[in-house]
Structures are given as structure tokens and as C-alpha cells.
Length: 212
Image (cartoon, rainbow, N blue to C red; front, side):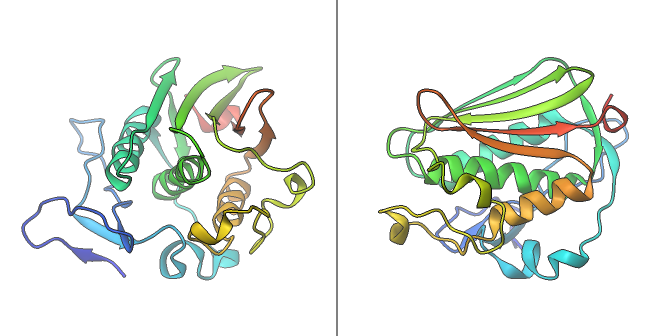
């Protein structure tokens, strides 16, 4: 459930609460979205992202992507009490036509997974660039990777990759299903591949008509 912070301050997150909502309506004179004083339950919440996901509607508007990534980075660092290296590389100030709230949530989910499934100090690189007249968002990490046998099923609802440390990681295997659903609703492609050295790279491909 959503609740306002009484004094307008940003609450310190704990294992049950996480700040992931932000204002989607931009001020006319500003291009940077401002964080609303709102908290939501953690990333496996069923009352916000995953309830009635098959009937989910999206509200598409143009917004600048870089401020959303900056906000995501701030919230990830705020959530975890450990050193996290997140680099954001954006070729130019791209604007995308999408549901800003859900785009933030899926990108947060992917970066959050990169942190959770890292057995070393997490190093995450978010790269946004044009490729063959399409816009690509790539999230690369140095985590433990995904066994080849599990890769075809990672977007299936409730599917969880077999790991020896899975009991220590919260979640119900719904997050990537939600990510895939939001990409499908936008008619975007998403793919996950293991890196040649360590970790995975997630690539989201945005159609030409959906960015400027």
C-alpha cells in the first residue's frame, strides 16, 4: 500500500519498504522528475506491480530517460548498505514515449536483481545508445550469471533460477515476468545473455517511433 511521509522527508528504507514511486507529471519549466514522498512495498509486492498483470494498461508520454536512470541509481544505493558501483552512459538526452512509472519499475527491477545476485562488490553499467535505427538500453553486471538451461525460462511467471543461495534472496519469481509484460505492452524486445567473462547483460530494444 502507498503512504505519504508526514514530514516530507525521504524515509530510510528497510527490508519491507522501498522508495520506488516518483512524479510522472513534469513541471513545464523542468525536465527532471521529482521524487514524491511515497513508499511502496518491496520488489515482490503483489498490490502494485503484479496484481492483474494480464489486464495492465499503460499510459504513454514522452519523457527524458537520463533523469529516470539517475533516480533509479540513487534509490538502489539508498536501499543497500554496501558499496555499489553504477555507471550510467547515455549517448545523448534521449526522450522515450512510454509509461514512465512502469519503465522506472522494470529498470529498477533489473538493476536490483544485478545487486542481489552478485557474490562480489556489484559493478553495473547502464548504457543507452542507438543501434541500427533503434534505441537500446543495456544493463550489464558482474554477477553470477544464469545457467544456460534456465535462460529460456527466466521470463516465465514464478520461475526462479536454481541457485545454492536462493534461500537468502527474497522474491517469488514474478519480477522478470512483469518486466517482460511491460516490454510486450510497449512492443519492445528484451533479451538476456551471459557475458563472456562474468555476469549478464539485459538488452531492451525500443522502436524508432518511441524515442527522439
